[in-house]
Image 1 (spheres, rainbow, N blue to C red):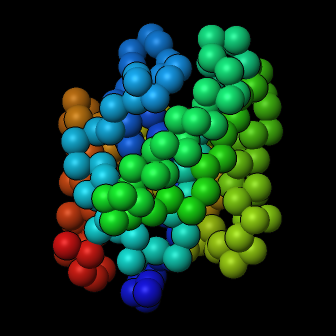
Image 2 (cartoon, rainbow, N blue to C red):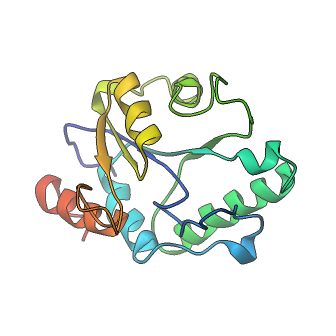
Length: 178
């Protein structure tokens, strides 16, 4: 059951939000994937408060040949399974493997959001929150008209240090997921 709030869709970046960012590297296999502290718990708490929880992630490592698309799909499948085992959910993952910065699907361009809305026609971007850890994530959110939330453990200008910190505040203000 979804609790009614002003926002019904949550878009999440992956690297640096759901999983630990690997500086100057890519998560190339499930063995290299490490959830950020509290991410699974955050998704458990947020799941009843959003109709859709969608991951939108640039994954240039595939385009560069550093990893295969099959490996990326395996990472995403296992991530979704781990979140579900923790009582949360991710409804879909959209990724852009293009190397070209001008790709319509590469954030900050809006192609992945448009794909999500094709798959979930009831998505209303004005009722969407985008949580990310980079300027391109924030620009992506602004371009679709979503509310943007910057998280970063080491950036004092960030609204929150982690997805878990965001989830605590959101649940406190908008309903109980705790």
